[in-house]
Image 1: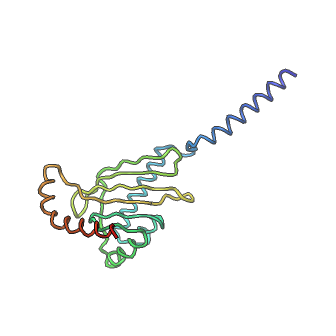
Image 2: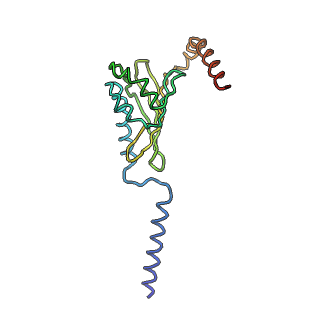
Image 3: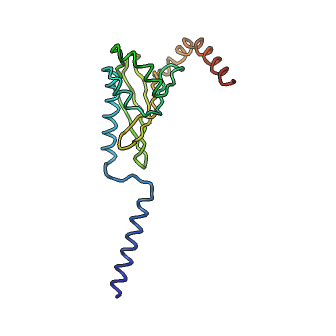
Length: 181
């Protein structure tokens, strides 16, 4: 009788542990972080390759329908749909862009549903920094936000600031005027 009660308590305790371990919000360990990071590294590189070979469907298809692409110009803030419309003529003329990874860092959320990354890229504009957020939806990783920015060496910042000050002043005035409406 005592052994049966101990067995029952053990099963009950094991059941609680199993139940509560599923409620912690931690990621199931089906894949290791290294496996997921490798998968994401390949995914991001393939996304860039799609642009290099002007594969519009693959490029836009890697982005979530509610995604955002922020380009190098201060006016370049697009939803996935708007970015698709803007970029399609370039891809049709086989004038996609070639962004080659120099280095990349990928980070995973505890739940395994989100990842974010930053990367340095060799581009036609010189060295650029990209950063993005991905989400796994229905078993597929999608880009929710991507930001591409040219890098500016600190010792050249004043020269760059001087070069763009006129355009920046006009854009700031227009943007402030829009936000006041």
